[in-house]
Image (cartoon, rainbow, N blue to C red; front, side, top):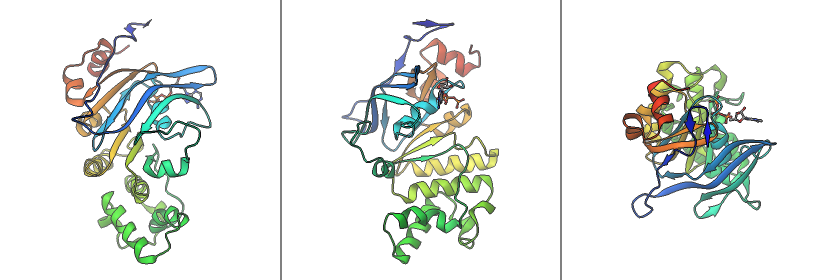
Length: 269
Ligand SMILES: Nc1ncnc2c1ncn2[C@@H]1O[C@H](COP(=O)(O)OP(=O)(O)OP(=O)(O)O)[C@@H](O)[C@H]1O
């Protein structure tokens, strides 16, 4: 199918070898509709465990739509068909406990959104709701999560101060700490650095590189340098289709499809 300059059937999608790579999450024939609008088509993607996968593409190409579907954040606004396979279970089916599933597949949003509470309470709030009451256990998780998000050294003496007094970059790392405190397996990140200055962005990227030792990360980014610096794999989206998906190094140096080549070289349109 040709739309504008590009043939949307001209795709190159990496498939993994399950004997060689462990797949943390995969989608089969994922389609997303907002009312009558078909916003995402034919998503058959696999995500390798303990890797960072970047989703790139022009504004409106369907990256967030796809990402938000992966832990059912789109349930209220969209119809999502097809399968999302996590540990052998289709989490896009009706009988899934969304709350439990999102403990495994957490999300960090575009704008830092800490609660208007202390730094510590931002992390302990959901844990307490989950029945963890032991003070020592909570303190341990607070420290471990803040260390995991590379924030501990900056805030360890201010844990009772308001999270809203932190800088934007620190707030975003606090949101990462809050997400990892729940002990997830996969972290979905929707442009986590778009509201941050370049130094905070690099700090979050360094944090991601540390986090991938324990978590599988899927990140939407508009920042091509960020995708090429921080990710192992990249999926290029165009008009609701995944056009090319490969190792980041390969996709950025030797793309297969015309659309990806034009996008990466800045001649897109
Ligand atoms: N809640 C919604 N209701 C209706 N249409 C929507 C909704 N959210 C997104 N869309 C449409 O779906 C398409 C894909 O949007 P999406 O936000 O997924 O793209 P994106 O690649 O993430 O864009 P951006 O980089 O600008 O965030 C667009 O045409 C958008 O207008």
